[in-house]
Image (cartoon, rainbow, N blue to C red; front, side, top):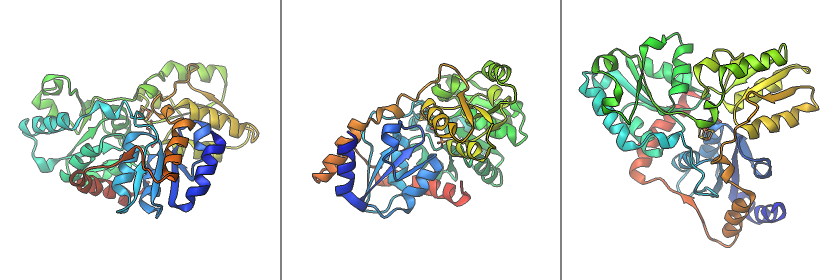
Length: 348
Ligand code: 13P
Ligand code: SF4
């Protein structure tokens, strides 16, 4: 596979770039021209002149690349089954219904801003753009919250309740000022009064990979490795984040490890491929890295991008065939672009 991928890449030359998210497996990410967190990859997609963008990541990332790319560029996701279970926890019809319920509770449309995590469909990003809102990633959630609160009293945060809760809490907003909207319950399972009173309405979505990390895992590693630094992704539950030494996007977690002096030991609470890669890379440089949870959960959808799928997509391209193209509808693209541009303006 390595030889076939390398040969196809050589033939395609600068017409094609490969973007790789940090959770990709080693045998795929080693071919990436750009690696990064969701923000960094979206920025790279918005800046490249290449005709073909092979996205080694998940569906919502490839959609965002298509929205941000230039006319004539084509985005390819090597396996169409590479989705995101969290993004699938919010559908556009449910979001529209939620919005109506919020307005029916007496909230004025200009008092609340819809803000969606990058991990959502293009249709939801477009909804946010059209309703005066924006997109954020885990690297700029705080800046996006500041942006929204400068313009309105309330935020509807989609679809990750944990990123929303962690961000709000670290800004000093008490948990009692946050309400959780459950799309599977009548009126979201909350009263109109609660909707009106909440500063942040959190969509009831989560990442199953990050939910596995528990506060007792932090206690366990602290007992086992005195002086250990615990760093976690903000998709982890608040009880874990509050016990950690630092939280950050995948790119930030890497930077924290890079900046640490030799001899530092880390427990990292995020997807296992990234943790294992960092453990290997930094062993020689004197940092010991362990996974926060011994079971070390993988993101099964990120894992779907295999060397076989990558070779297949590239070899088809060599033959002049574009397979697995991700194409966002033009009407959706317009407003999704507005929401994504607002995000790029506030930075990473
Ligand atoms: P990052 O933007 O931090 O890479 O996160 C993306 C993601 O899906 C984490 O689960
Ligand atoms: Fe989605 Fe979680 Fe996988 Fe990230 S780790 S892509 S949020 S399922």
